[in-house]
Length: 306
Image 1: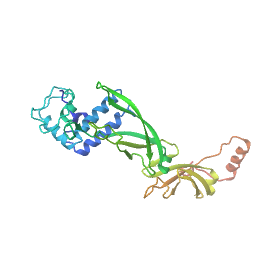
Image 2: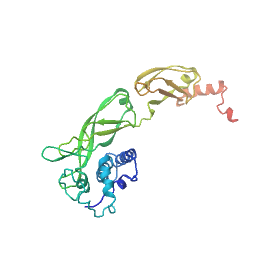
Image 3: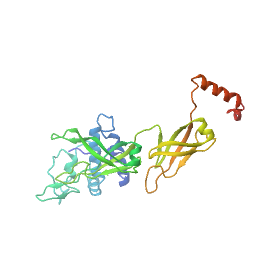
Image 4: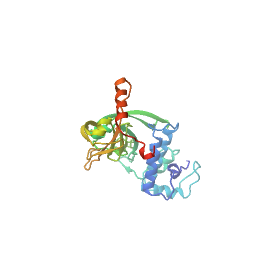
């Protein structure tokens, strides 16, 4: 069989901690997942990453792999484990050409009646994009996933499956939703792994999100900004009556406490005022602007010496 360097596959040192290995795996599997990657070999690379993490992410398998690795050759070179390695374990009878199955199908698994081997499936990762309103209200979404798997001849193929996902109220960007048993299938009748969906927000020119705080740009008229008054503002949680202080300028920030993304300690909603001038596109509008120019002693460039 050929030796496979799982540390090289994940881009980590042999001295890497469990947390470092997990972090490297999650980063790479998100990068090469078929749903988001444009790489031609994304399916193949994802399969290789799952195989590598299946060993290095398990303490018992990693210890056995490291022990064997002391006498290994280079990546892709012929390699044969010691004759007595694995004594006392139940072999799965896997094809000897598959390095992973040949060395580890029996490590970390469990026997079942009849001597066949069981191993729980690997976890899988994907991303799901939602609207900000979904985080405020909660929602149900149907997603179509492309899942790489090996066919009967060992070739990697992609199949589609549709899942219904419940978006809980209060999710934040970057948060992961766990779907139990929706990961890669197990072997020998063992349960499947879990699917972790990373939350992403659909870009929206109206909103900017930082953690649980939400920032919304609100257009106001010159007279609303100058004179102040109450205006109605549509927000992710519904329309709110807001008091604009007199003499407000573009960029003024109004805080609505607790109206950010909901939680036990909800975030805040910040309204960023933007003064919008009416167009001077008719005689009446031009006359009003001319009157203001004559009667108002206002020079916005005074501080610049203009």
